[in-house]
Figure (cartoon, rainbow, N blue to C red):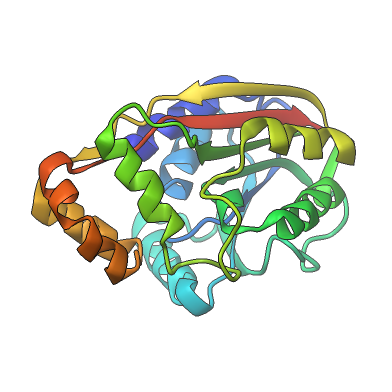
Length: 240
């Protein structure tokens, strides 16, 4: 339901009039991909989506899961899964994309990787094209949100050795985007409203997130007491 709401939020804040090619950077298993595309289909009859993911290492099998879901949802002809790294998207031609979307992808990169990814986004995006990146904010409102932020810091599921951040600050990303040449930068906030109060569910989510077992063991009592809760997301919108 959170991804359904996030997809709706994106639709409401983007202009699809001149969009024919969409790139989702870091699509994973399609949690956002499918609801987002379903909603775009309601307002556009002709478009295509490149669903890009680094389906290797801790992400191995992500695109296989996505392909299965696309067959089941009958979206195979509309969405093309691509195995590639956002820091080197040589498989995508210069200025060939009208819209770039990502969610919880930038947090997997260190600063050097983030700079490389932003340069690649600029390269593949058409002049006047739109881009939006969503990430969990680092501020927490309660102990359940604090645990999620700290758990992300101890995740074993990273594309690089220990990132410098759990999620990059919006102003830092905005500065890098502006430096690269992006314009019309706007930051908006999305209430995730996602919590896991049940201890068994919280533990299952921590396992899915590949959180270091040492962290889980050290914080077991807090997890039992508070559960887990997503903080808000910031979404950075811009144009080339």
